[in-house]
Image (tube, rainbow, N blue to C red):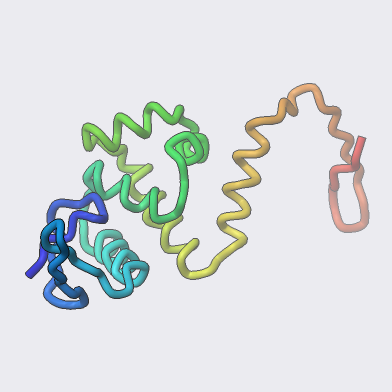
Length: 147
């Protein structure tokens, strides 16, 4: 068995799916289908762990190619707050549940869910407080009209 540290988690061991080779610098290990391995690790984590550790939270975030700042904005926090969660392992329950849902939606191809998150983050960057919103009543109910 081979202890796989390439994912940043200390408790992952591979029974097979890898090849050991001798090199002039020592033993080297080549993992077959790293992408598939990481997906299987992530699915195991989100389906079987009652609470995520900081390392598991970081693993899922990195698998989705999200920065600490980007994910923090999604949850309404600073990126530094996410860094503290990952380092100390004190991930709030809401963030724990949300990252599981986000991972599953993104990896199962629900692009609209990712688009919603991206749009919310973009909206946070723009100051909309001073934008004038004009509402008009139509046959289909109230609708916003471009000001």
